[in-house]
Image 1: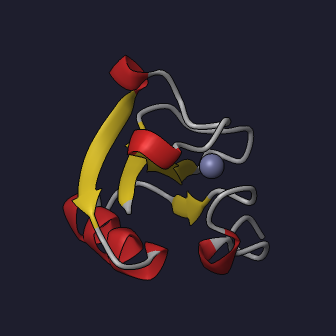
Image 2: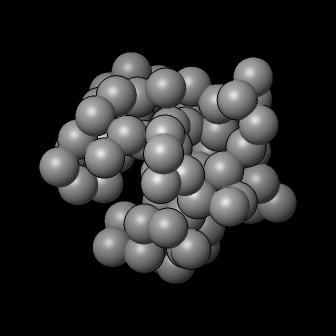
Length: 76
Ligand SMILES: [Zn+2]
């Protein structure tokens, strides 16, 4: 599965990870507003890479497409 990271933050100052590519999440950002993370088995690997590449960003999974990586407590 291909994952991307949104270049812009949501209302909680988090950058969301979405599924991209052929099975893209309907809520994933426009192509020019996303950073391609690559192809991973599951979202936790994509999340790890994103946090390593962008340590200063608050990164969370999208509630709609990667619920397993969505952390409701990240914002608190
Ligand atoms: Zn999504």
